[in-house]
Image (cartoon, rainbow, N blue to C red):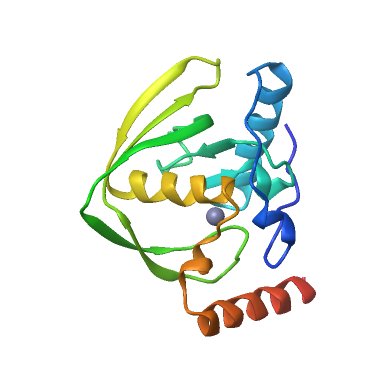
Length: 169
Ligand code: ZN
């Protein structure tokens, strides 16, 4: 496995609409393994392929927050099939927007259809942090970063801080 460089704002790649994956093969599984290692090293709880420079519809997540009991999840070509009317607010962050956080409202629950690590179709009903996280990650596949939901002033402040962080290494 390898740790991949993470793309940060305002890189235009993050605005790319990611392409569907044609088949879940060993090459894709290697990318998903590398994405997972990159996410754990960061550390983070979710990562979209576009964040490591590959604009394809693939996500990895692990909400266990426990190094000794990892719970890696892989989502290929995820499709949102239902969202609740109820909203939930979480203080979100993003590996592509390091050290910036903001409260974001999203549907509290959602249903998703996707292919798993082995290419099998799966359906899930996500609630709580899981629901927020997967919607945040799926936004990346559509070129949306969480700071896009903020006012233009707050968004430009966040981008400026990230540019400074990256410049200072
Ligand atoms: Zn993110």
